[in-house]
Length: 258
Image (cartoon, rainbow, N blue to C red; front, side, top):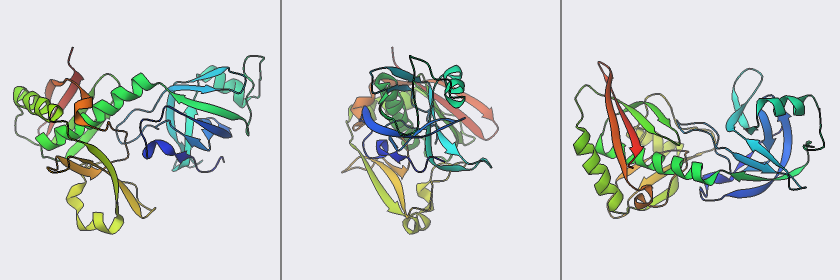
């Protein structure tokens, strides 16, 4: 086991890279002691990027996942997944002249910033959508190309009204801040949780929150994802599709405007 990975992206989503030490190489990927890579979770896709080796060589990272124990439970590791052929070589200790990697090596973990920034913009946009559609969410997916929320509701939604609302909130340049509440505060305010299927992680005593707005609060909810610092940074975003997925589910898909 590699031990806990310090998730430094939680405090600063704008960090592009960090120095880190390899603590394990597992079938799930390369585990580091600290990382700027966000692992798949909360509907948001995992980061991609590279690990830069001491000799200047690079290992592509195609995905990032939370580590798992042998019985399939999540642990405190973050695994950086290289291409499968390379991972198999590393697991079988088939070192080559091009790639030599071992536990204890120091690397620079560097994210694909253009991809991450799209994820950040989309994730914050979904929080704006939660403000415009004040219903519980029973499904979520945030990718570099689109984002979608599934709302637990039966009423129809108007695409033009939602687009106008998104444009207004983006243009208003509301600041976004990261904070925290205690387990007890969340227990006293269960309505802060907008998701029906995913509960905020507990156990540390503090639950990370995202707040949009200062004088006027637009949205406030527990969230572990990466976000932009201001709604203006989202840029032009529009509802590309509204679907009736079931009698009690309305799906809203977001895309960046051309």
